[in-house]
Structure formats: structure tokens, C-alpha cells
Image (cartoon, rainbow, N blue to C red; front, side, top):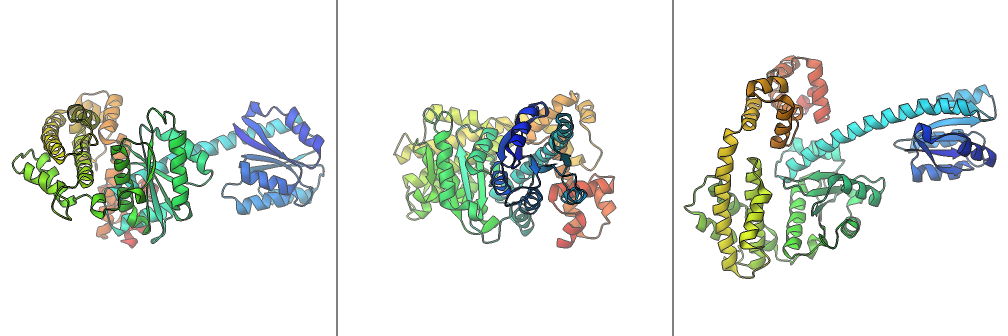
Length: 508
């Protein structure tokens, strides 16, 4: 339902509007009433109605002043309909200058008002639908950018684009709140909106499906994000039987600091989970051993490479190198837990990249070895790490063989090679002997994107590469990226990157 606010200094007019007009028929509900301009302004700020019916002559602030204040001070002002007892040409012209939607004369005419409501209801719904589309597209792109940053992709171009889109200053305080335990993204967004009001936090999902929130500047103060995290955990369904975990990482540095801050939050969340606890935890609450909060990236990368290549020789030595705390060269239990957590994530990520079921794999490991919190003894951790490597290599080998022989894997490979050509699901369906609709579903399952999104991403990335070279005409850049229509290419490039191709080229 859309909200409508009624404003008039005559009580009988308010009562007439409230009772005579069939608001629900046109999708409206009366959310409030005011008898003067000051009260009306407070209600507009508080309730954010889509529509306001207002008189012109009122105490303190007139209807026209109320409209002007809304136009100048609100990011999204409501639509206004004026009800006036004066058939005054000057008032009507002023109302038109203020872009008022209609100017109606008292006494109230039910049919006239309902005709206005029918027209405005259609306009407002169309605007809301368009805003939903734009919000959804922005949400997808924000998720794409944030995942590139937290996964370690760097570069001035990426950071500048993210900083501009998210409105984050170069040295600004930034916070990342991670939430885990079967969180439904839509429900989480609704609860965050309830707890934060109009303040906007950026949501994303990381590669393991955890929901994250990013805030900067005044929204990112540790106290505010901590309060939000605690409320989310306290009010989440199943908080007793299946407690949610919310972990916070904060620090200065703007967009360039997002990855280490995300890693702080992730390490904190893992620490909380390993202690079999739910609820909120701040990264500052972890034991203050610097090495215990860091992953030995070099040792982890080398070990994951051995697992991916299915080379058991050297695995045990690589495991020893990963688990030995750098401060002494000796094992430290808390440090070992962090390294094993990173190893689990690395194996799971590689398995997911090949289309495997990482969750089922980890459930199998837990069924055989238990969880990492069930033993305080290093030899058990060491045996678990070796078994994880052996089982991970076998699972990756099996999934790789399955993926190579699967049709959808070959379809993605074909799109990666031929994205510059005219590609359509119908044609791919005929080529690979599959129903186009079913092929589209499998394609999204494999890549995480619809066929059209994936194809556009490939083409825009190629266009960026060509634009950086600087010597091709815009028409050739479009054609060589898979867009035979230059105008359509420019439109798509602006939609997906936020800048025109010509501006992108100058910036490079």
C-alpha cells in the first residue's frame, strides 16, 4: 500500500477526506493527518508518504511553503495535490511552478478526487517499479565490485569505481559486518531496513554465501555497527536452537582497506564458530596475538596448488609449513585453527569453482573427523589437515573429470571463446542439443549469472581492454567486443560501469 498524508487546518475537511474517499481502491492508505504546515513537515520526514493532499492557507507554514521545502530538502519528495477554497489564478500558477500534480477546489468532490487518485496511483506504481529495477541492478553490481575487492583484486581503476559508487572517501573509516547461519538475504535486508531506517548499508554475499554489510563514514562507527549486529542476532528466528553469528571488522583506509577489514571480520566469525557460540563478536575481542589472526598465505597457496594438481609428494611437508606458528616455528593451537579454517575455505572454493558440492564435502569431513573444537591436541589437527588434503585432491579430481565431460561446462567454454559473435540461448540449445530454458537455468547454476549477464560482462571487459589501448574508433571497439550497434554498446557500457566509454578511455 502507498501512504498518503492529509493536511488541512479545518477538521471537517480532514474527516471528509478520510471517510468519504475510497483510498484502498487505488492502493493508498491514510498514514497521518496534520492541521498545520510545521506538523505536516515533521510527518513527511518521519513517514515518507508517497502522496500529500494539502491546503494552501494554514498557520505558520503555508501549503506552498511546505511543498517548496520538500522539493529542496528531500532526496525523494512526495507528490502533492492542493485542496484550496480559493479559485485564485495566482495560486494555481504558483502550484504549477512547484510541479504540483493537481489543484482541486473545495468543497470536496469525491469523483474528482478519485479520478486524480487513479491517475497518480498508476504513475507512482510505475515509478516504484522502475526504482525496484534500478535498485536490483545496482545491488548486483555492488555485489560484483565488493567481491572483486575482498577476493584480492587490486588497481586504481577498480578502487576508484567502487569508491565513487559506494561514496567512500580515500581515508574514511570503513566497517564490515559478516552474518552467518542460514541467513535469508531478503529477510536480512528487511530487518536491516527496520533497524537502520533510511540509512543505507551496502549488502553483498561472499564466495561462501555469507551475507556481509559494508558501511563507511558516520554509519560505520563501531558502536552503531555493533548495536546492529547484536540486534540481528537477538531477533533472528531460531536464535536459541540455531544461533546466528555476526562478526565485525573496522578500520580506516577507505576502499583500499576493505579486503583486510573483511578478513578481520571473517577470522573473527570463524573464531566464534569454532567456539560453538552464537551472537555478536567484535574483532577486537579476539585474543591479541597478531600471528593468530593471520593466514600464512604463501604456505597456503603452495599447499592448495599441490592439492589442485593432485601431487601427494611434498604434501606433508607443506602441511607442516602451514601449521607452524611463525613466531617460534612451533605449533600453536589457536593459530592452527585459523590456518585449517583457511585451508578448508581454499579447498571448498576450488571445489565450488568446478561446480562441486563443497558443503557436502565438508559435512563428510566433519562426520569422519568431528569439528576443530573437539580436540586440543596438535597431532589430531595434523592428521585432519593431511586427510583434508587427500580427500580434497580426490574430490577435485573427480569433479574436474565430471565438469570436463558435462555439457554446461562446454557451453561456458564456448561462450568464453565466441563472446564477440552473436550468441543466443536458442542457438546454443540447438548446438548442444538442450532445451534453451533449461540450458539457461544450468548456465546460471554453473556461473552464478544469467546467460545475458555473463555475456555482457565478458563483452564489457573486452571493451575496457580495447579502450585502454586507445587507438581504435568507438565503432570498432563496439564491434570487436560483440556489439555491432555502437549506440547500444555505449548505453550498455554506461549502465554497467557508470561512465561513458569515451570518459573511461580518457581516464586511462
